[in-house]
Image (cartoon, protein in one colour):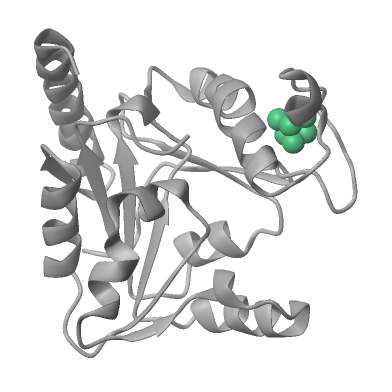
Amino acid sequence: MNENVKKANEIKIKTVIKNLEKRNMIGHYCETKAEAVDVIKSLIPEGSAVSWGGSATLDEIGIKTALAEGNYSLNDPMKATDPAEGLKARKAALQADVFLSGLNAVTMDGEIVNIDGRGNRVAAILFGPDKVVLIAGANKIVLDEKDAVDRIRSDACPPNALRLGLQTPCALTGVCKECLLKGNTICSHIVTTRFSMAEGRMHIVLVNEALGF
Ligand code: SF4
């Protein structure tokens, strides 16, 4: 990454972290993916039950592998091949001690915007696990909520739909058509988190690299 882009990203991330504070969410600045893994591990007490939502960012930083080498009870709902098992694992994730996820966009003012098809990922972010750790690259920072939704529809959904093998208009043409397609739509829920009621629950790890989509 260009040195000045990196510097500009650092300034942006620090502004976001300051604005997360007023929303009772704790931001963490990380220079690299490796640093992010160390920060995330430092937030998870040994022996914790840990689960996560589907996320290219989590895969890219290698946190699942790092946790598999530690002393944690891991529930990976994405591993289930049987639909009934997958549903059971997603429900169990709502009772994890710590829930990890990427996020789809964070505004300069510290609002977190996420989309979800089934809703299990946003459900766990909103309520259930005692601690939520969201990880994002600098590419997820946007000006405001409108930009967040635009980013989600143009940059996040098409590759996500392709990753999941879905036939959405955005995957087929690159353009959102506000689809309402059973079994395909991944924007069933568009959720903005603007404040955390629970002290110390929401941690946002912001990495000065481009991660996920
Ligand atoms: S509403 Fe449908 S077409 Fe639009 S971004 Fe979401 S999945 Fe894609």
